[in-house]
Length: 316
Image (cartoon, rainbow, N blue to C red; front, side, top):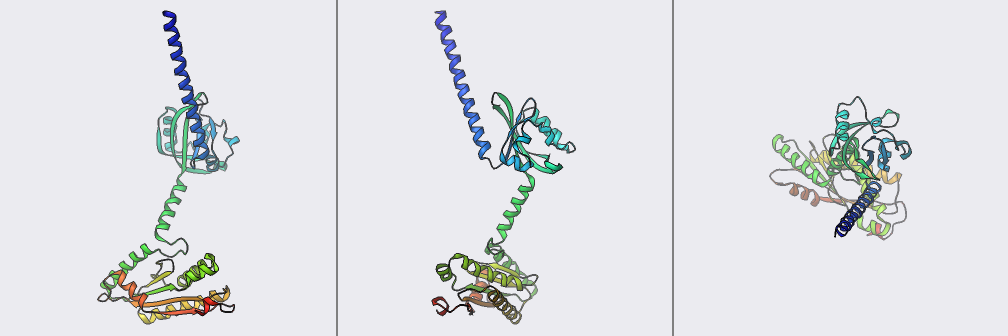
């Protein structure tokens, strides 16, 4: 009976070890996949020696070193000894603490300082205890934040203020007119034949039209004015301290700039653009939408011919 119990015990231990080994292998496989696919710089650090066990491609990019150069290198060599929080970070890492967004100062190649946020956790890997360290450059975070702010404000294709921000600017300008009585004129522009150009000549030519009009508008706006892309083919200028007669002169400069660009970079099709002007009048335009609609209604068509013989597009 004792032998049977002993056998059961051995079998139970064997089964437990088998499960543990399988789970360990699965963890290591998961860790391998994480290292390979992670967009974050990652290091495996031996918990006893604090030597780097391995690095992923993003860590090599961040530190400016190859995997061979990082392999078996003491992690402490990468920490700037003069940075106050580095020693505290190292103590917590040695203690096996789980860390999130801990600011550190790293030393890359050629003594290049790298501000980074570090996150760490401990696990077993390859039969030893290791710290898994993730590093994110603070400069990259700041750049990403700046990009988000940029694209929340400006149109990616043209660099003009986007619709949401543009209408907010117009709303503030309208409030200023009500307080100061300084005139503001809205210039509306619409590329009439953009769809036809896209369909016949391709979207690259349509993009050329969009960017050409954008350049012409930004080249003539003054300090305090705003150039806005309202929609795919619709644009707007908010002309501060600008009565209608001055706005008409600015619009003439836009047309001249268009002609200059088209002459230096000719196309086989006509540029057909509707332009409209509206002086903001609080009594007639109670909302942003009302003044934009007024500028869009009072329009005339500007047509700039292509250099080649006119086809169906140019003659319709």
